Length: 93
Image 1 (cartoon, rainbow, N blue to C red):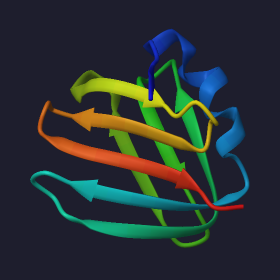
Image 2 (cartoon, helix red, strand yellow):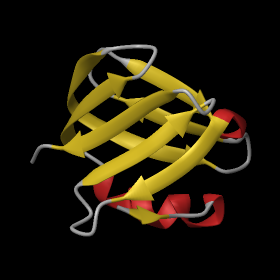
Image 3 (cartoon, one colour):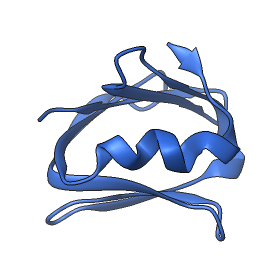
Image 4 (cartoon, rainbow, N blue to C red):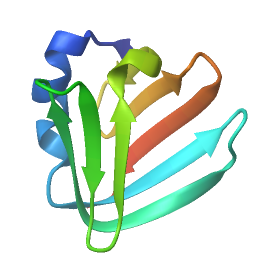
């Protein structure tokens, strides 16, 4: 995994649009969420990462992010939330 900066989020997340997305949570909150035909959009003006799908919407305030990373193949976006919850987002198609 490669560390990324907040200013690079918009470019990194452009490949996570209109795809099936699997969110895996570990360390404090455990489980997974499958989002069909979802997109991840960084709202730079308001400081949120928005994950939007057919019937789901998740907003994450970037001020609580401890670390953002992308896999070398660009298929997995990972972040540590509030230095405790580990979240990995995988694009499925």
